[in-house]
Length: 179
Length: 279
Image 1 (cartoon, each protein chain N blue to C red):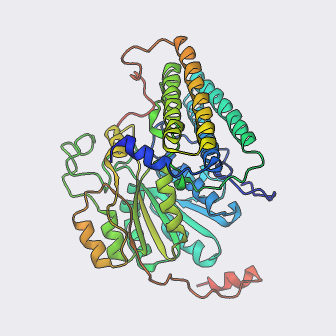
Image 2 (image 1 turned 180 degrees about the vertical axis):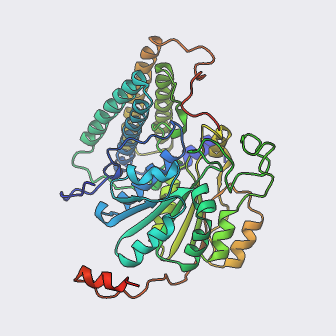
Image 3 (image 1 turned 90 degrees about the vertical axis):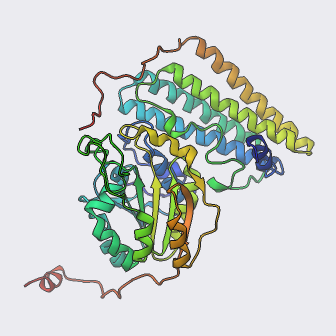
């Protein structure tokens, strides 16, 4: 099965608005928690500019959790286990633990965030494509549009940060040298 | 350690301590920490009823990063310490964490006998096939041809230790392999391992991005095992004979009764207890 086929097969696990909002809530929560973890990591490694940026992204995602919860007000959202969601591994919006480097720059942070926002757009689009329920399709399209807006916003941020030159990850005095 | 005083269920975040990990950014152990805290929340455990025990090494720092009871013990001795704790406090959920050097070299003999004894606990080994904390030496699971270690020019030259084979041969009651690149898949396996009675052993392939950067590829090269776990040790052994080390998921789910000695009545007077140890 190809990757798009797998994505569409998984998105059929979302049968109604409650399922969709439960997934959206997890998506924002996993993204927020990971950004906070990454901010901690960068603080520990004295990369404070990047730490501040990750912290800011965590704060933004935390607001999105509140927004999704407000959308589900009065609905009985299912409590899904981490491995019961309609995606492989972690949610599309969560930065993976191995995507970072202690010398990374704001350019890398914004690029990674954009990549994951785009994955979130694709996820909600696959729900729209694979559902016949008009209410579910409408809500998924709304969530996809919101993620598209985040991609546009991050694109504006990215302009502020030039792409670092090759060798940005070379450290003349690394914290760990092989012995 | 903070405990839950409100009725709201604890989340994975509640199981993270305020201590910020000092691992290298990108380290696979962050994924394992995420899996562990998710599992504790999913199993609705209370921090005061969980003990995370470790030895020495990068991954053995985990007890400090988890909001539960913990013990950062001496090198290779996490398992006997945890066995002592579990048999005397059987109501606790005991998790042992560590790396491949701590568990299979310094603590190798304890590993064999912990599998044999089958006390109800879960041993999570974050295997990166290198000693990371001491800066990049070959470990028991390092492949024979790994030539980048300064102490082993040309490679260690000996076959690597195969943790799942040893666990099966020694009597572990639940055996699985995971990838730290799949924290939710690992969480699912850990939930099963913790719930399964007896000694559960979970090898987690957890890249060392500093000394083994090529291990980042594990995220792409690992794949879910195409077969269901078996309760037949002979069948599990045959599967391991053709295993390339990259299949993930549970391999063996046994049914041996856990070892739990009958506990003596609690000691009311410490002086009486001291008398028992006098020679």
